[in-house]
Length: 85
Image 1: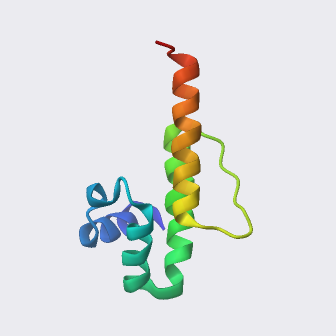
Image 2 (image 1 turned 180 degrees about the vertical axis):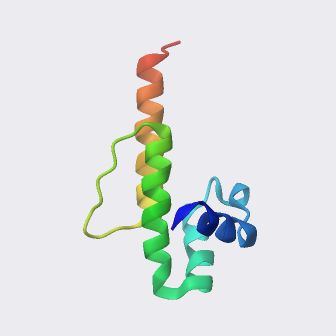
């Protein structure tokens, strides 16, 4: 998809509005791209995990909201392990 494709999506979707609600992000992408939204979500999830330094493995029943929440949990657990209070 590349940088320009992502910029086109972000032009239409303000990601800051969806930080806490990946489900709403999915609904908006689906409104714009129909079934193609899942492909975009997989690319976004893969890039998110890469940027956070997390291992990414695609599952058969991909669910964007679940994937993002799992990423949050994993990232938080790693941060707590690396930087205990």
